[in-house]
Amino acid sequence: MAKEIEMKNVTRRGDKYRIRVFLYTDANKKKHFHTETYAPKATKKKDIEDELSKRILEIKATYKSQGSDIALGREMFFRDFVEDWKENYASDPENMTISLRDSYYDLLVRKAVPCVGHLRMGEIKKAHIRKIMDSMRQDGLSLGTRKRVLSAVRSVFHYACEELDILESNPSRDYTLKKKKTDSDKTYNVFNESQYIAFLDAVRQGFDVRAKASQQLRAQKIIPIDAYQMHRDLNEQWIAFFGLAIYGGFRRGELLALTWEDINFDEMLITIKKTIIKKKNPDFSESSDDRKEIQDVKNSAKTEAGNRIVDVPDFVIQDLRSWKAAQKDLANKLGHHQWKGYTGEDFDQNYVFIDVKTGKMMDLGTPTHKMKSVISMYNDMHPDAPLPMIRLHDLRHTHATDLIYKGVAIEEIAQRLGHKNIYVTLTIYAHYLPKQKNDRKISKLYEKPKQIRTA
Image (cartoon, rainbow, N blue to C red; front, side, top):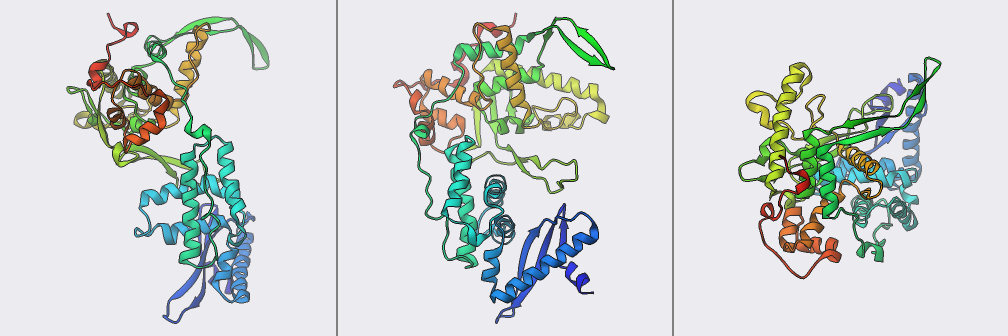
């Protein structure tokens, strides 16, 4: 009977369990509980129940022996305390917004918990905070990302020190991130004008793919494969995507969140008012096939300044027109059984860039893989003049540096990129800034390159 009563304090969440144990009632008749997330080592139902029951008894014994929930809080593992922070502190709108809570929680789970999640709150010192930061620096993460993780960690310890008073000092309070020379002197690996024109021309024209002679094992038989060459085309979607990336400087999440309603074909304007974010999948468990993270649309850009309207060259708009017509044909070809997007009068609610098998939102990883594939195929065809293997996000830097070299005012570049002020832009692109400025309209600044002019 005792075990049955104890099990009422347990809620299953995937492969883990949320334990809530009553501790005491204070003078104001307020009940105080201990809450933690526990992952049993056992696999059988009865063994799991025994393990959970034992953990509940341990919690009660710890509180009883120490005489207060302060000692109990110090004994909580950092990974469990993060869950408590999220539920009882970060979810309070007076403490932080929902979007900030989700961002902090994601950073804590991915960057801090792997380093110190196994330590108890009372064990964590300044050296452990340094371990988290050093691990991210070794992984090549930017100073900005490291600062956000540090802010998230500080919020957790603020809750422990100031709100719950379970720790005497905050080990993250006095830790500072020093900007190294490499952070301030950073330059970006970008395409120059001739390179991005060659890249776009290759996307438009396709590739002659060559394969060497080889052998394959099929049904226990060695099958010789002769050398061959074939032409591989990219569909209109990628012509439009890379054109917007290079001539608009948009972030990946902004591009994938675009719907046809966001494009003003007549005025050649693109409205940015949402982005794609990744968040924890509530249905995920280690035993399921569900993804650990899922992507969703956030109905605002990355920052308030990110909500903007950007003009692009007319030939980019023409590529978008072609892709929209092709997308309509694709929807008709797939039919209502396979096409999961909108049809008829609601067609403009479809995402501009999609999974061509379903019409649904394109996965965030797809453009990155396509970018690498395009550069690799181009370099195979042009071994004497290869393109640098830059990142997808470097197309945004390519656009910014190209505008700087063309003499566009830094204020206009900041507005196009969605920076909150020009100081952000100046910090990032200080090495590229020329003295002259030019305030011409961006869509009039470019002429269609000869390589991609149609007959």
